[in-house]
Amino acid sequence: MLQKCANPGCTVPFRSLHEGKLFLAETFAPESPDGSFDGNRRKIRKREHFWLCAACSTQFTLHFDAYQGMLTVPIGNGTRRRAPGQQAACAGAV
Image 1 (cartoon, rainbow, N blue to C red):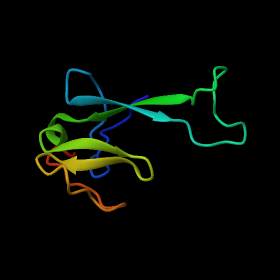
Image 2 (tube, rainbow, N blue to C red):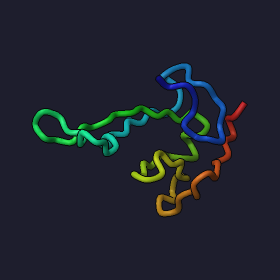
Image 3 (tube, rainbow, N blue to C red):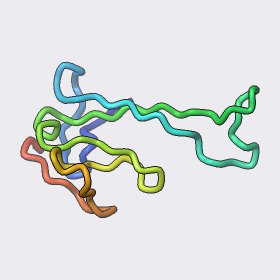
Image 4 (cartoon, rainbow, N blue to C red):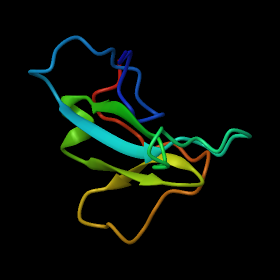
């Protein structure tokens, strides 16, 4: 369940789908001893929802990286990603 804005530098709690922007990330389940395959030998997919508050969604978008997870990326600068652990500032943080 969504708890707060996906921006690590923001503490705005999730309250409604009418505010901000919702993202759906579909990834493959991590490798496991059983192979993480369904009955048809297809890899099992995992779906997760992420949400950016209204203030953050005007400045950032989300990008999924297979090794680092969900990253906050400034809008208009899709080639530049934050370093792991670096937080993006949010004007709407309370």
